[in-house]
Each structure stands twice: as structure tokens, then as C-alpha cells.
Image (cartoon, rainbow over all chains, first blue to last red; front, top):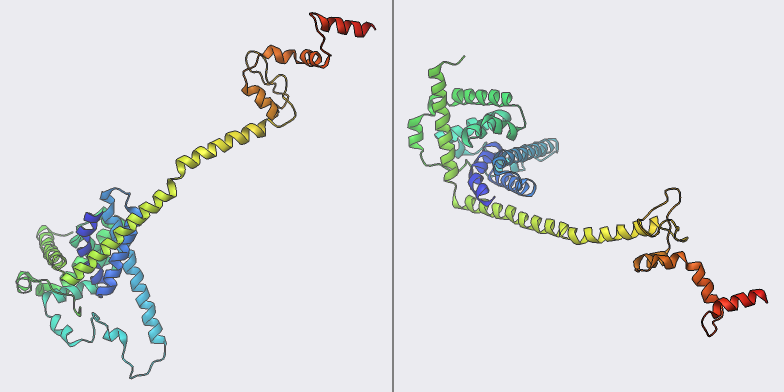
Length: 188
Length: 154
């Protein structure tokens, strides 16, 4: 189990960060997924661990997004003074409102992050599980809790959207310039 | 329908994206790696605790099962055989025969009888031996018979 978690933790973290756009939230989600996998599914065959782990991670990500959405709605509803700074805007890793964000968006990786982050949740999951983690259609369906047909549809649409969004800005030449993977935008 | 060149083009695109994301994962900074490592160790530590607690949860099973089985044997035994005297048909010389029409309810005394290896003929002649014990003992061979005979005649 140790070797398995060590193998998937970095990719899981990147996947969670692309969805949550926050390092701390991503780490929390990954840790929760690890704990739950260990507690509930350690006795299952190793071949089942990966789809199970990503299913748990996906649920944690969705939970965090819901909580964040509720918090934002609550903040919007709560009367606040105009001078008070918005903690969401000031939080590290928030994609909007930071000058360096505009600079980094010109970088190919930042563009990729942005494009993936802008995908609908299901398309993003299908794409990341398939393209990044290398899960097959059946494993991705298990991880996403949907049919294999839905996986194929979400994945196809995700690839199409990314191609449209990134277009020629994201090619081998750009990758050559930004060969060194970088921190997520706003990560301190 | 997607033509073959477009399919290949898409695959190359996905491949590039995949490589970039995997490279990003492989090059996470030390602080993040350290936090992930701590998270993993923390998760695995819960396994140890779970295994320990699971072991604690089930390690009483053999001893508990044995104790429960013993209790059940005793309860069934005493419940099925309530006091009230041993049905004479329950214990007979030879094979054990239980009269289905009569509840077999031996007492603890009956259990004692069952436990000892006695001559069953003694049990059949128990009335005789009781009578024998009640009559006064006189010296001399045949005194019992004479006495009873004499007392009866007198």
C-alpha cells in the first residue's frame, strides 16, 4: 500500500490542484483519499486500488467544491463593508486578481492549467484520469461512477475543448520553452 | 466519423499534454513532496491502528467461542433435563431409549447417576435394596429372611 500511494500521490495532487486551484485544499483531498483507501479498501486486490483511490479523490474534490460554493454564497449573502478585503481574492492560489497571473497565463503550462480548470468537472475528470493517470475506460468509469459510454463522451469533449482553447499556442515549441514544470499559479 | 489523420493528431496532442502534466507531477517542490509524504505516512498509520483494533476486536473469538459453546452445552443440558426425577425409560440397560411422549427431566442427582459407572442391575433392584436397608440387621446368615418372616408371622 505504501508503494502504491507513493506512486500515485504526486499525480493525484496535480489532478486535485487542477480541480480545486488551491494547494492546501488539494493536499487535504489527497490525504483524505489516502486515509479512506487505507481504512476501507486495503484488503481489496491491488488492481482495484487505483480506480477506487481516484473515485474517493473525486468525491473529496466534489465535496470541497461544494463547500467552497456554499461559503462563497454565504459571503455574497452576508452584508460586508466595501472596504473590507475579500479573503477569497487574497487567498494564495486564487486565479483571479493577481497581476502575475496575467504574465503566467502566457506561459504554456499556465494556459494548460487554465484550459483544464475551465473544463466542466466531468470532462476534466475524464481527461485527467485517462490522459494523465492512464486509467482505461472501465477504470475511469469506476472512478467517476458513471458508464463507460459517458466516459468516452466526456473525454472526447474535453480533448476537443482543449484543442479549441489551446490551439496552436500549445505545441512542441511552447513545451520546449517551458520544459521545467512550474508551481501552480499563486502557489507560495 | 473521425478520419485517421485527425485521430493521430488528437493522440499527439493528448500525448503532449499528458507528458507535460506528468512532468509537473514528477517535479513537485520539496515542500509539497514532504507534505504528501507526511499525508501518506499518516494514512498508513491508520492502517496499523485499524489492524491493531481489528485484532483486538477479534482476538477474543476463539476463547469466547469456546466459552459460549460450553455455556450452551450446560444450558441445553439443564434446560432440557429439568428437575423432577429421571424418567425410568431414559436410562435403561443397553442402548439409550428416550420416550418421545414423556419429557426427559433428570435432576442433578440423575446426572450424578449418569456420570458414575454403576451396575444398572442395582438400579433395577433399588426398591429391594431400600427395603433391605430399612430392616434391622441381625447376626447370622439368613437372619433377614428369618426376621421378616418372623415379624410377619408374629
